[in-house]
Image 1: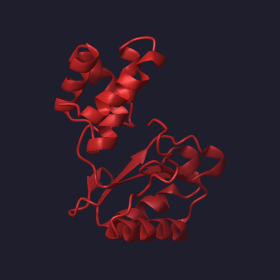
Image 2: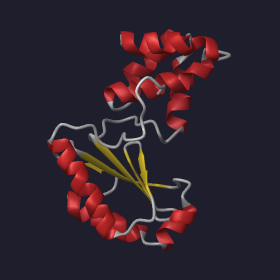
Image 3: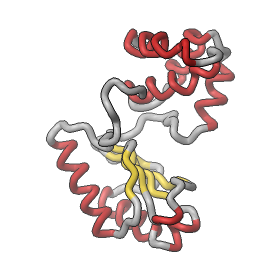
Length: 174
């Protein structure tokens, strides 16, 4: 079931979109933002709200890697391992993150704090290697910088702060 907050937000931006299908990306973003991932149940609700078949919603949600179709940790750490990042040390970043978090890529820590994954491209070839921590980008990385980022994320989580959304502006969708 979609929350009233999601419905109200979508209804508020509806006039700016040419079709109901065009609203699907914003709906999926809002679902993920509210629940941390996009479940089968939420895809059904999105389809009903936008009068779209479930198959269309699943097609879009599964096409874009930005949508998480399984529960994630509070911190979604995505390390780019495409060629530019790899040649500039992404393999060292992956090894460091796996060792430090005690998980392999594709896994979530037992406490649900971190999910680690490798991604194909973060469009930062000129400043490789790069990673995303939730919505925040980090570029020109090395192992010491990764450790600083993980230290800060851990401290912020422990303090109950929002992690990885420093570029978000209140009142601006999404």
